[in-house]
Length: 222
Image (cartoon, rainbow, N blue to C red; front, side, top):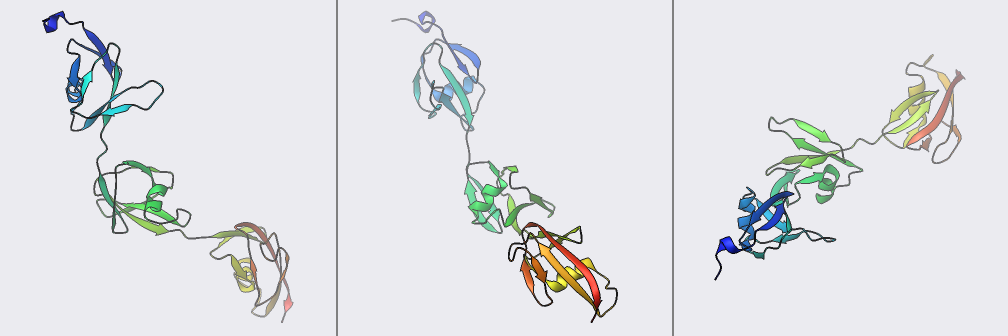
């Protein structure tokens, strides 16, 4: 019966670093320790050409072959966090803010995600922001303030409703009227419904998200 010294030396890699051994049947956990990785934190995975890495249990006894290649993969622990006081959990510790909003049943088109800092401050995050989740993180949802951009007498203005009335347009055009009894003619184009026309007192028009144009002229006194 041969001794370990008579066995052929087997060379293999973990995370691209070469190691060698004469013991051709070792547990996955032993190889992790050889690479300085804690089996409680990392899993060993065998690289399979043309396929996903094969993740191995710590107690799996491997039949080592010359040239074997492995990866040490950090284990994903279950993280618990809150959104609007409701608890959620995940093993995916790097997610976009929009994904967390959807997890909470919220539409990223109408809500933003904000993180509550340790000092109580709130930081609003962009939908595409990748968040490094940590145990106990707390978030809140923030309703977006919808706005529509119109142009009144060549000047852009934001309104908070798609339905714009005569008084609103006149106020934007003339914050201070020439006189209390001044009459105005309001015309519009590139609207949503109706597309163009004259806006009469007491009437409204549905504007587009951007680009509806109004022209307001003082035409006399009532």
